[in-house]
Image 1 (cartoon, rainbow, N blue to C red):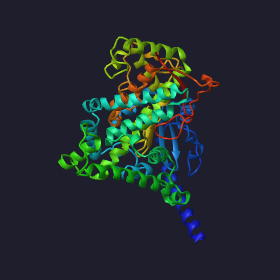
Image 2: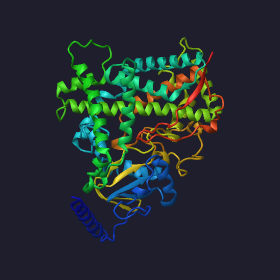
Image 3: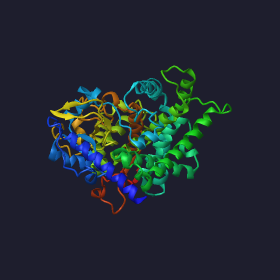
Image 4: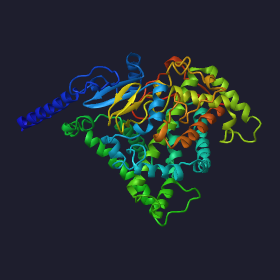
Length: 501
């Protein structure tokens, strides 16, 4: 058995070597520069999977704004400047708008039935239409305003309770609770606090596990001839466990909505909208329960993680820069001072010019997803004079682009003032600031995500004065992240809150 296994490995590597040698004959092919890898494995051994955005940014100092890596025989390019991002996401968007079929994202997305990970095809166009027209349009997001306001009030109340008892506020945990309850009410009409504590903890763990699996390494993706190693390492069973838990959770939610005795709600949630669309059969494909579960996965995972992460990153930078904290709080409090209510509402946000600048600067400095979801090239093309093969994986490092000195003055400093009087925005037209991406694969949840983030941040800045616990200095606040597409601060942000009179 061992001899047979060794023979199969030898045969596989021999075939790959011959194919590799054949490819070398294309002398005219001119790929982007990049670090030299090892035979067969490429650059995998050099890659920092914990903070890849920082590792790749350092490589750009050596190889320029577009560079090449290889994972096995799979070519990868990394885009790290605003000018090159515009080429890829606008000028040649049709060449770069697909997704690779990676094992983790395909499995968790019910074999590619969602919107985030599906390749670019007719199905993608139909499912994006569902999201844009029926689920995440501005009117629908506006209809969720009472949910947002209620969840923000609950967040403020939780902080007030801890503050009155002189307890430390774990803002990372509270932000996660807020974002999750908010998105759960929007998606399936149930407050997260109404779920048992043990199930709640299990669900949090599942969200983090899914994030880790999305960027996890699977031999199947890069060395398909030894895909059996994913079983040997336990990665395959880990993926199946996560999928089974997610599927069970989704089944319970959908079955609850299909119950004819379920009480009617005033606010139609996303599951209800999708079930109505399924009944209408008004699309170019049959909308099945698996389609609904795949779309739910996108909305719940992305909606929870990005909003929670952005609240924490914004507060981290404001604690590091107390003069900015004071300035933004003064603006908010002055605006709300003459109102007959003691909170910030959605209607107040457009009047908060400096606050909006803080939001944009947070998106620039700490995008929730430092690397956009990986793309795949549709056909061979040329970018900046370099040849790019079909089926090449494409990573857009928006963290590095936000710190591109060609695009930003003092890019390593948190300076909201750079956006005052500026038309630069994060809606996909200004390629130095693309936290939600751009082009055909731009995130359709932008409006909902920004609304959830801004309303929570504005209210906790309005309601409380914030400080670090005794013995903790602002220099102790680090930027270390947890692995995932959306990157949370690894060390929880624990603060002292004092209710503002």
